[in-house]
Image (cartoon, rainbow, N blue to C red; front, side, top):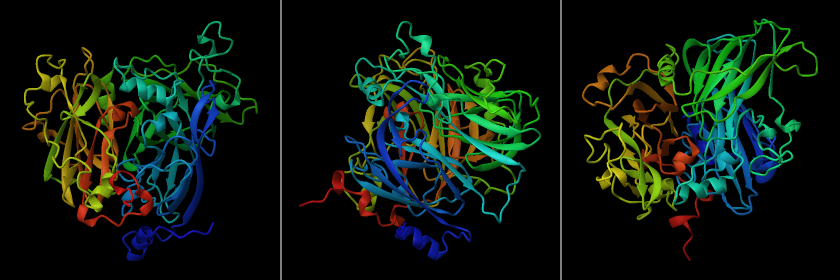
Length: 579
């Protein structure tokens, strides 16, 4: 396919800013369109790339350049694709975030993403406009090391699974409910999917002749919802790449009868940790090793269960198939595997604290920070609508992309008033209590879109503080994802963060690096990153409905070093051509 590379990528390679001896260029032609699919045996309208859910997998080698020609065949809405875990050094305009890095791609238009996969690991791509990810717009990115390099662990072969949750309601009905008075939450998912396959029980709706409760056709024998199979040979050791693209659910992954040795998190090396089961939150990925050392006359379940919420969704299942078995799939004779109690947060916190950086493979953590943000995460009301807010500001997207606003110096694209570094006027805020109905500042929040602006190269600490929701005795897990960066996790804590004492417990010796971290109920997490990637980057809860409801902020850095913007990223808001 004859096509020139993006000029900024060529400049980076020519200047030696990125050096990859074995790099190649890979081209993809993708079409986004509606189609019908039955990933959990229930047929419904989905949003698919090239007719597939999950969409096409990208297999690459560290240093490769990826060129994706994306044509939008959705008749009534725009689309963008975010390349989750790709740092987009030098190409911040291809991060694929609507109203941040670019305008949405209009119906009928083709947009070309060109970027370098700068680090080996397990990643994924997904829609990043409204709640399109929930509609099935996602897929895997698997990046191998060049042949000249070796992983610091041994395995004979590898497999990968992408985990997701699934609703029978359309995303449009879900979005309307979130925006409505009275509020209508999306509810718990109908199914949990492993590599895009699950099993909804068609018999749950009595007297419907194979229809789901939403009156959609349900066919348990549809091959689209057959169990995903992971074939193994007895005695061999496997690397299993696990990534979660869920829209709501925190998950626990179990491989029946097999322990898991965790060796990477979000593409970063850690000291190997052996676990019986693995907590994984939306936006995260892991590589685990396991040895196929069980009775090879039978097969075993791989299962995922909901964590952090009352589990009203049955276990998502795949089959670990020991070869050579018969060509007819022999289902495991055992019950679906269980997981720790859904509300055993001490278990989850203890597992999260197990991960330490693998010495010699990652950059050391800076020992101090030049700036600290404390972000209080609350649930509030704005004009009667339930929203999420950070330091009393519920984030809303602007018509003009932030990146274009900074690069083109567009006034009035967003409020010039900087957002607060710490919770405003709330030094005594009780994170365990319901908002005080007599204090409007606790009940009510404000819409806002002002970004945090950092100096290029500045080291930044961010503490995300969880609190009670608008429901009594309720606080939730929130996985926070940072675009354009990985960060060090300095520590987790229970209760309210104490800026005078809690930093003394920060891990400054061997903290792990990753791009998505869970904040546990009524707790806090502290991260540190270096603002060394000129661009504008969202930092947000990776739960689809939560970000839709305002749980996020924008980080801008190195504004004076922003590259020129491709004209294809413009054309909306204040970047519209003026005649």
